Length: 228
Image (spheres, rainbow, N blue to C red):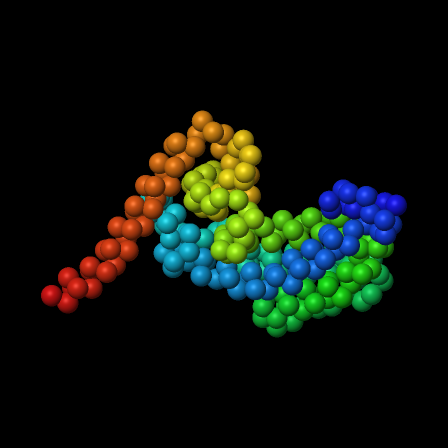
């Protein structure tokens, strides 16, 4: 009998990850390539993703969403997965694999590699808990941006997080309220909103939504005006 290093529940297999967390980690790994692709429309402010709503709240809109860029860049999703594959291969005394091809190709290859090692990871690797936790957090970070409609278990969608960092960049990740939760917490930047702040939070989101609507109307009217 042991304790799963991810869910911290008793595990009769005696390994480092219980069967449930092992299956969940494999599922998260396999979802990463598709999630990486889903982030692309959210990269450029004004392209139709949540970043389009955020750009109205800053004086000089960024050419790209820094949060999405960090996930899609070399040190983002692909970097994390490749680093973990390298760590696993090193722990198993296997030669390193040099990344090759596009980021999409590299990500899929790294995912396939880690999935193939999961039986060993779950039973024999002391770092399995840290690995599984980081893969879970990576998937959650991506989902907080793309917000697939089939993730209803993630709570009630409220809108984009209005937190601003020291550089004046608005977070913009999707905020959700989970049943029974006493605060709304951003899964990306970690900012929390207690009940006393919810009225102001809703006001900001409503203002942001109105700005988006006005921008869409202007985009429809301006071509007609130009043509006349």
